[in-house]
Image (cartoon, rainbow, N blue to C red):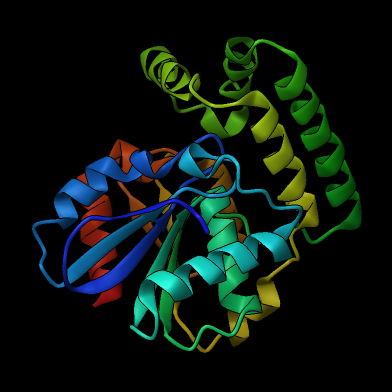
Length: 253
């Protein structure tokens, strides 16, 4: 079972899934704001290989899906609930939504989330790239790898000060565990979910930071239903938590 924390005693459960290198603590600014809304009961989880779930392993998306489903069944039972996921957490939420029978799942809200790769050569390129990063996380000093990781184009909007803050925060991660998660949940292994998005009986919403040019292009390319967060990059809930909560509550209503 995955590590978890409830953040209020009552209300409709809203479950938050963090991204790669993160933990349930990443949602702190969002949780603080949501605690003023008594109809919402936030629940945060640590994904496999992360935080207090670091010793919980997964080999691929089906095994991650099984861990999530088991944890949610034990914690939520037959209550209606929403899933919110950022980046890797969004991909895990999307996979669970379209691949698992979850009769009490009301819908999902996905932040900075990729729906999969359409072209086989793109999948092969992504697999080789993720394997290179995984090898570095396993063998090099974590600070050095993180310095390069946060230079990737998707993080281009980070200022030098913000980048330094994020790197310092992520230095509590375990490089070997991150390497395992990269291989297990590589975008190369994720199905391409465009068709399932069109046929889903549950609402699936996307949230994108206005400076996140990559994911804005993806949302437009696949005609996704998405909300923009002002003055925000890839990690919109960190950059503009107030507007993120505003959008979140509107979507859930």
